[in-house]
Length: 186
Ligand SMILES: [Zn+2]
Image (cartoon, rainbow, N blue to C red; front, side, top):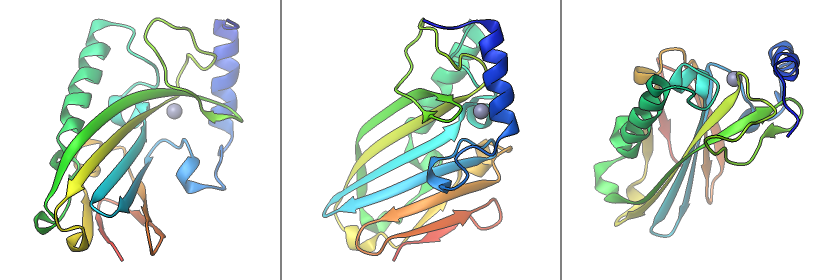
């Protein structure tokens, strides 16, 4: 595995210097920005959340000590409870059937890589990591899914923008912020 302190510093500098992947707001690693995708098919609603380690955890790497491990564990427990971070209309009757948190290193020019595992050394083993959270819901009245309130800003104060992609019959991407956290679903 090619990895050294020097490589880590070089990659970090490159990542900080470039507005990486800025062309596609759904595939960026920009501190202060996160992505939420909602995909609805019949009764099933799938939600993907991606944020940076720096915004959601305060660090851009996999936990390297007990304190960071505890923080990651707490974050994954908090995020397991959807109302912690998203408000969906109660009338839609959505209940979670699956939850899957994961961590992904970010490498300059290549974006987020495969899932990280503890104890493994990564090229970007410095400062950049994406945190992903995947949810599956079954909704009794999916036609009542008329809006979503993004509550991530309350918990992650460095977060300024969340790009919300609604995928389905009418696709749209909306950027929300702390002052306008509600997305209307077409
Ligand atoms: Zn980062």
